[in-house]
Image (spheres, helix red, strand yellow):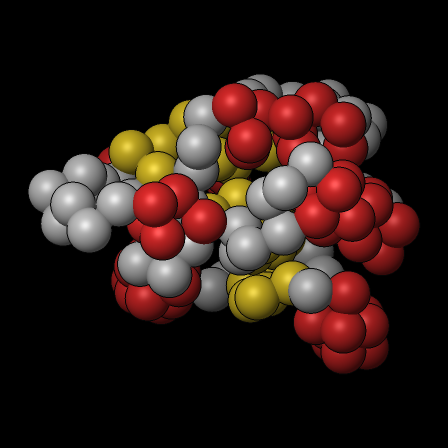
Amino acid sequence: MDQTRPIRVLLAKPGLDGHDRGVIVVAMALRDAGMEVIYTGRHQSAEQIAEAAIQEDVDVVGLSSLADAHGVVVPKIIRLLRQKGGGNIPVVLGGFIQPEDVPSLKEAGVAGVFGIGSKLDDIVAFIRGIGKTGAASQKR
Protein backbone atom coordinates (compact mmCIF):
# COMPACT_ATOMS: atom_id res chain seq x y z
CA MET A 1 0.00 0.00 0.00
CA ASP A 2 1.41 3.38 -1.09
CA GLN A 3 1.16 5.63 1.97
CA THR A 4 2.50 8.65 0.05
CA ARG A 5 -0.56 9.20 -2.11
CA PRO A 6 -2.94 11.71 -0.51
CA ILE A 7 -6.55 10.79 0.19
CA ARG A 8 -8.59 11.63 -2.91
CA VAL A 9 -12.00 13.15 -2.22
CA LEU A 10 -14.66 13.91 -4.81
CA LEU A 11 -17.04 16.67 -3.72
CA ALA A 12 -20.29 17.28 -5.55
CA LYS A 13 -23.55 19.22 -5.42
CA PRO A 14 -26.25 16.84 -6.67
CA GLY A 15 -29.44 17.98 -8.32
CA LEU A 16 -30.72 21.52 -8.59
CA ASP A 17 -29.06 22.80 -5.43
CA GLY A 18 -26.90 25.73 -6.46
CA HIS A 19 -25.68 26.92 -3.07
CA ASP A 20 -22.02 25.96 -3.02
CA ARG A 21 -20.36 28.24 -0.49
CA GLY A 22 -20.25 25.52 2.19
CA VAL A 23 -18.84 22.80 -0.06
CA ILE A 24 -16.14 25.18 -1.28
CA VAL A 25 -15.14 25.92 2.32
CA VAL A 26 -14.99 22.16 3.01
CA ALA A 27 -12.94 21.64 -0.16
CA MET A 28 -10.39 24.22 1.02
CA ALA A 29 -10.21 22.64 4.48
CA LEU A 30 -9.62 19.18 3.01
CA ARG A 31 -7.00 20.54 0.63
CA ASP A 32 -5.27 22.39 3.48
CA ALA A 33 -5.23 19.10 5.39
CA GLY A 34 -3.22 17.52 2.57
CA MET A 35 -6.01 15.77 0.68
CA GLU A 36 -6.51 15.86 -3.06
CA VAL A 37 -9.94 17.36 -3.79
CA ILE A 38 -11.91 17.06 -6.99
CA TYR A 39 -14.94 19.35 -7.02
CA THR A 40 -17.39 18.51 -9.81
CA GLY A 41 -19.41 21.69 -9.36
CA ARG A 42 -23.10 22.41 -8.97
CA HIS A 43 -26.11 20.75 -10.59
CA GLN A 44 -24.59 17.30 -11.01
CA SER A 45 -26.74 14.25 -11.75
CA ALA A 46 -26.38 11.08 -9.72
CA GLU A 47 -24.96 9.40 -12.82
CA GLN A 48 -22.35 12.14 -13.34
CA ILE A 49 -21.22 11.93 -9.72
CA ALA A 50 -20.92 8.14 -9.66
CA GLU A 51 -19.08 8.11 -12.99
CA ALA A 52 -16.66 10.83 -11.87
CA ALA A 53 -15.93 8.96 -8.63
CA ILE A 54 -15.02 5.82 -10.57
CA GLN A 55 -13.00 7.67 -13.24
CA GLU A 56 -11.09 9.71 -10.66
CA ASP A 57 -10.35 6.63 -8.52
CA VAL A 58 -11.37 8.44 -5.34
CA ASP A 59 -11.20 7.24 -1.75
CA VAL A 60 -14.27 9.18 -0.55
CA VAL A 61 -17.29 10.89 -2.11
CA GLY A 62 -18.59 13.96 -0.29
CA LEU A 63 -22.02 15.31 -1.19
CA SER A 64 -23.51 18.65 -0.21
CA SER A 65 -27.27 19.09 0.03
CA LEU A 66 -29.15 22.22 0.97
CA ALA A 67 -32.25 21.56 -1.14
CA ASP A 68 -33.78 18.63 0.81
CA ALA A 69 -33.43 16.18 -2.08
CA HIS A 70 -30.83 14.06 -0.30
CA GLY A 71 -33.33 11.37 0.69
CA VAL A 72 -33.73 10.42 -2.96
CA VAL A 73 -30.51 11.41 -4.71
CA VAL A 74 -27.95 10.16 -2.18
CA PRO A 75 -29.24 6.55 -2.08
CA LYS A 76 -29.32 6.65 -5.90
CA ILE A 77 -25.66 7.71 -6.02
CA ILE A 78 -24.73 4.90 -3.64
CA ARG A 79 -26.66 2.36 -5.77
CA LEU A 80 -24.91 3.62 -8.92
CA LEU A 81 -21.50 3.40 -7.26
CA ARG A 82 -22.24 -0.22 -6.33
CA GLN A 83 -23.41 -1.01 -9.87
CA LYS A 84 -20.26 0.52 -11.36
CA GLY A 85 -17.88 -1.35 -9.04
CA GLY A 86 -17.36 1.46 -6.55
CA GLY A 87 -19.49 0.09 -3.74
CA ASN A 88 -16.58 0.28 -1.33
CA ILE A 89 -16.16 4.05 -1.79
CA PRO A 90 -17.50 5.69 1.39
CA VAL A 91 -20.05 8.46 0.88
CA VAL A 92 -20.31 11.41 3.26
CA LEU A 93 -23.16 13.93 3.25
CA GLY A 94 -23.20 17.48 4.51
CA GLY A 95 -25.59 20.39 4.49
CA PHE A 96 -29.11 21.02 5.68
CA ILE A 97 -30.02 17.53 6.88
CA GLN A 98 -33.01 16.98 9.15
CA PRO A 99 -32.09 14.77 12.15
CA GLU A 100 -34.97 12.42 11.33
CA ASP A 101 -33.37 11.77 7.90
CA VAL A 102 -30.08 10.50 9.30
CA PRO A 103 -31.14 6.90 10.15
CA SER A 104 -32.49 6.21 6.65
CA LEU A 105 -29.43 7.81 5.06
CA LYS A 106 -27.11 5.64 7.13
CA GLU A 107 -29.22 2.59 6.28
CA ALA A 108 -28.80 3.48 2.60
CA GLY A 109 -25.03 3.42 3.08
CA VAL A 110 -23.98 6.95 4.02
CA ALA A 111 -20.84 6.71 6.15
CA GLY A 112 -21.23 10.07 7.88
CA VAL A 113 -23.63 13.01 8.03
CA PHE A 114 -22.51 16.54 8.85
CA GLY A 115 -25.19 19.16 9.36
CA ILE A 116 -24.90 22.90 9.09
CA GLY A 117 -22.56 24.18 11.77
CA SER A 118 -20.32 21.09 11.79
CA LYS A 119 -16.72 21.86 12.59
CA LEU A 120 -14.25 21.62 9.73
CA ASP A 121 -11.78 19.78 11.96
CA ASP A 122 -14.41 17.10 12.61
CA ILE A 123 -15.10 16.69 8.90
CA VAL A 124 -11.38 16.47 8.09
CA ALA A 125 -10.77 13.92 10.85
CA PHE A 126 -13.71 11.77 9.77
CA ILE A 127 -12.68 11.77 6.11
CA ARG A 128 -9.08 11.09 7.07
CA GLY A 129 -10.29 8.06 9.04
CA ILE A 130 -12.53 6.60 6.35
CA GLY A 131 -10.33 7.68 3.43
CA LYS A 132 -7.64 5.26 4.49
CA THR A 133 -10.07 2.38 3.96
CA GLY A 134 -11.76 3.69 0.80
CA ALA A 135 -11.78 1.99 -2.58
CA ALA A 136 -8.68 3.52 -4.07
CA SER A 137 -6.59 3.08 -0.93
CA GLN A 138 -7.32 -0.66 -1.02
CA LYS A 139 -5.53 -0.78 -4.40
CA ARG A 140 -2.39 0.88 -3.03
